[in-house]
Image (cartoon, rainbow, N blue to C red):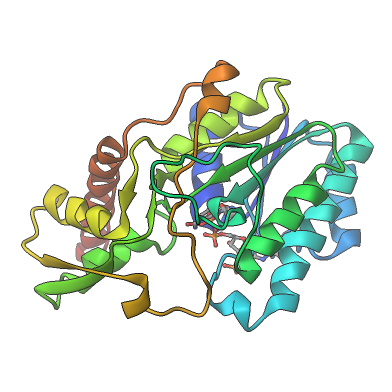
Length: 294
Ligand SMILES: NC(=O)c1ccc[n+]([C@@H]2O[C@H](COP(=O)([O-])OP(=O)(O)OC[C@H]3O[C@@H](n4cnc5c(N)ncnc54)[C@H](OP(=O)(O)O)[C@@H]3O)[C@@H](O)[C@H]2O)c1
């Protein structure tokens, strides 16, 4: 079976490749912008039609949420036109497509007792959210398509909230973190496992996938410091006190019932994921130290 993974230099793409290889799938085309610029229709045609993969796991995207407010054309080009190029070519050769989307397709205005399901009305509030939703529509050009909406992603290969908190803790003993945006963190190692499981099936459709547990960013920060034995005070602040260019949902809680209903294993609890990720970060640091000493 031949896989093609886009965005392999990013957080998720990197772990999807690792997951595939760990399961013994060695026929994996590992692409980032240098190998295949997804906005270049001819390149996408050459890479997909020329190589005839069985599955494309499309992790490449424009992911800078605030910057996208200033660069809407570029975000649209990558997230919508780029995805359309991939959807058209995968459809042409009868190949499965997995498109990664986001909780930001919802406006998040429902009270916290509400959990968003896959069929709920979307109403993205940011350029990023709008382009990712239009990307979902583009991906559906291919009927053999899985749309997987995830949230608050952290992985070894790239920057994320966990790394930012750990970095800030090196110089601060108090940190202000937003406590009125709720959602679920997602460890790329766990999501990658699910994506590979899905790719082996024909259960096409839309799914929500994140680690179990609904928390605020402030609670997530507290858990990060707890797991890493760091004594830093987290001050809970409101979104109003931490204005950003892009508007973010207050309630980003996603229902994973679509996974259960289709026989897919749900991701583990976020606390468990955070413990494993913290271990992975420590091992990476140790290995870097050893390399320097050599
Ligand atoms: N990160 C999150 O919290 C989050 C939350 C919900 C959903 N998602 C979705 O999850 C997926 C994976 O996210 P991630 O955090 O792994 O993203 P990421 O780390 O930003 O990786 C995306 C990769 O795509 C590459 N890329 C950008 N433009 C490209 C182009 N024109 N052609 C080919 N490759 C291109 C990027 O290269 P450059 O770095 O050089 O631009 C980068 O290596 C994305 O679809 C994202 O929208 C992410």
